[in-house]
Length: 146
Image 1: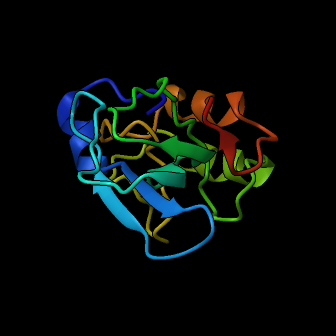
Image 2: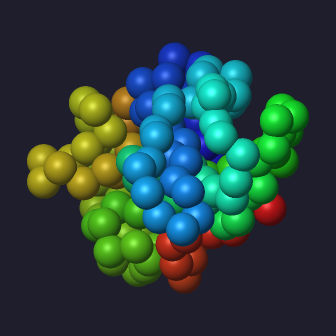
């Protein structure tokens, strides 16, 4: 998670990975461990789509992952911050919302309207939060999981 510096904050944000058969079907979601690892066990052989997500971050998608009987090691993916207003694109509106909360101490990463303004979860809306949103300006969900 972009800008998240502590393991406890990472765990509190609670990123997840969802596994769905590529042709459709029942999904399974697991919580990502503090070290960034996750596991689905057992998974029948086949083609699957993976989605890594966390509130306030741009989700990542890996389509058509082929599962066999062998363990799979995936490349890491960084979920980038900046989805404040929930419209699936990091825009000037997102930057403006975070900037308007600059200096505020927040609980649960949200402002009074329930929008995630403390992107990195350190308890205060600071320049790191504004920078995270600004650095992803124009990004549209989802991003590719290599």
